[in-house]
Image 1 (cartoon, rainbow, N blue to C red):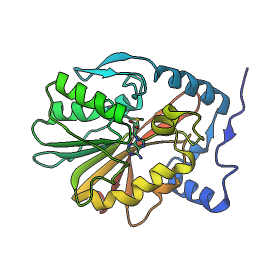
Image 2 (image 1 turned 90 degrees about the vertical axis):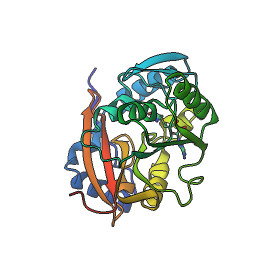
Image 3 (image 1 turned 180 degrees about the vertical axis):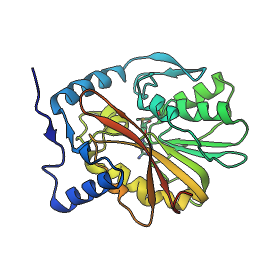
Image 4 (image 1 turned 60 degrees about the vertical axis):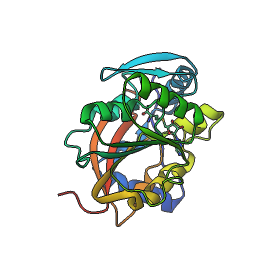
Length: 253
Ligand SMILES: C[S@@+](CC[C@H](N)C(=O)[O-])C[C@H]1O[C@@H](n2cnc3c(N)ncnc32)[C@H](O)[C@@H]1O
């Protein structure tokens, strides 16, 4: 059966809709407004069920354990997507990296294995995720520092060359804890708070990298004087696009 894609932004208040569209225009992604809602809801349900299982994944050679309730770093996940699109990444020498929402640690551990000795800090709002990240770092012989934190709250005064956030992407009211922390960001509120706080934690010349999607609200990216850029994007047959966006205080040279 064919589904007629609906415009995701049709029901938004006028000002929010304008912002959403401004950001899409800025990124050259005007067609992002369209996706197949029913197909997306079905794919989301499957994705949600996976997050309740216990599994190991090989991520860039690292053995990553994802217990129930910790985001699963499958080859098709946004974790693997982010790691695939980090060409030309400037991280400082030695690297100084923060990951917000570290989850299983798959991204931070892969970066530490790629880049060698440096400062690698991961935070998460979920203590289950922090325990998994600690276990995975130890098993893979990688040193990372972990803190419990709601975004930047436990990082006052700390600055980094690169900040990563594989963020919850779906603009939908969560029905349970798995959706609340890992998958859903109703009204783009988490993205909004991330964008509002990120410049205070970047060193001069540093950049943040955040995943976003057309099934989420990306209006918060329209936040001058910050500069945003498109680093990578993938299109699914449901019409869903996910993208990796860089955020800087200065224009990219
Ligand atoms: C999509 S998962 C990504 C996990 C991991 N970075 C990865 O890529 O496999 C999003 C992560 O962000 C965390 N998170 C959500 N809201 C947060 C917040 N306000 N502060 C800190 N972490 C948060 C979740 O607990 C979850 O571990």
